[in-house]
Each structure stands twice: as structure tokens, then as C-alpha cells.
Length: 242
Image 1 (tube, rainbow, N blue to C red):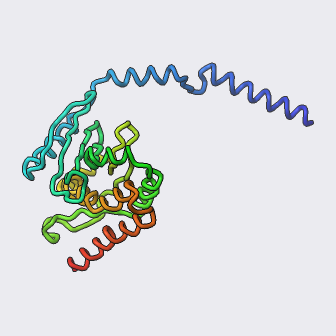
Image 2: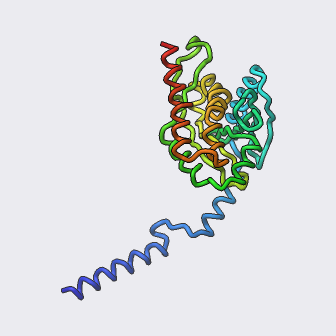
Image 3: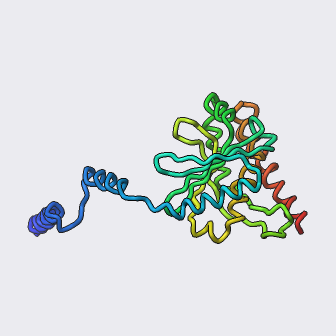
């Protein structure tokens, strides 16, 4: 009985494999997958919505006197920005970029080239990754209108990820993907979040991040500093609004 059952299983396995290779079940080889990607790249991209959103954000940046440049990289339109008045950030400013894809935009806010240089030269990257793990788990930044709620209520609109980029630059950055359907519902809030809330957040985190990278404090001290700078600051702000 056991031998018969084994032969039965072997036959089922053999028949299944034959059906796969005969094309009865769809299976893609690596070559076919790469061919499909190449073919997809040749298709005209639907960027009308992306360009519309890019135009809206450019108008916002102009009206708020935020320095920016419009660029095109590998057929992907994007904006790069510089945020001043970041007194605690390396170089006293931070930077940002927004890449506009077919269905969503990818927004990043990150420290300047000086911060990148300190990150590359640091011997404490493992501690930085621990700190970022804490930030990703605990920090939920709010967007505020700066007018005590006259334009919109302060809320947790989007939760960005904190990371060090793996593209060779080692930028310390916040990153998020925003669908255009979401952007259309909260245009002003999302624009304020990218250009005001996130630069302010990076400014508040500068001491904990860079003192840790420079070896001036350990990871436990850096986390306590985050608790003081971020959670203490948010608690105080909420009390003032009440």
C-alpha cells in the first residue's frame, strides 16, 4: 500500500510539473520577466496628473518663498527644495525632494551635505539604526497650520519612515509615499507637512542624532533626548492649544 501511495504521489508530481512546462499553469522565467519590464518602460507614461500636482506644489512653494528647482530625472519629474531657519540642523538648513510618479508622489526631507558627511565618517551607525528603529515605532508627527487651528485641525496626517539611504549618499532622511487621491483631499495640510512639519521635526531631532553619531552621547541618552525634545514638546503644544 505504501509503495502504491508513493507511486501515486510521484505521478501527481510528475503530471503537475508537465502541466507547468506545457503552459497549462502560467509560469514566468526570469528572461520573460525582464522582457516584460523592458516592454513596460517603452509604453507612454500617464503623467498628466503627476504634472498637475507638481504645478500645484510649485505654486505653493513660490507663495511661501521656499527655494526650489524643478528637474527631470529618467523621465520622472521632481522638485528639490531647501528649508531655511533650521537652527539646530548641520549648516542651519535641511533639504527635500518630491518625485512625481503615475499614481503617487514620493516625498523626502533630509539633512544637508554636512549631516551626510558626519554620517559617512561616524563609527556609531549601529546606534543610529537603533535610534531610527525607536523613531519609526514612537514618533507620529503632527501637521499644524501655525494659526491655532484657524485653517485646519492639528492631526497625525502621514507617518514617514526614518532611514539612512542605501544609494551611496547615506542621507539621513524621512520618506513617504503619498497617493494623489490622498493629496487631493488634504492639499494644504500635505504641503504644510512636507515643507514645515518635517523640517521642524528634523531640526528637533538634530541633537539626539548628531551627538550620537559624533560619540558625545550613547543610545540610551539619545532616546531620552528624543523623549524630551519631541514628546515633551508635543505635550506642551497640546496644553497651549487647549
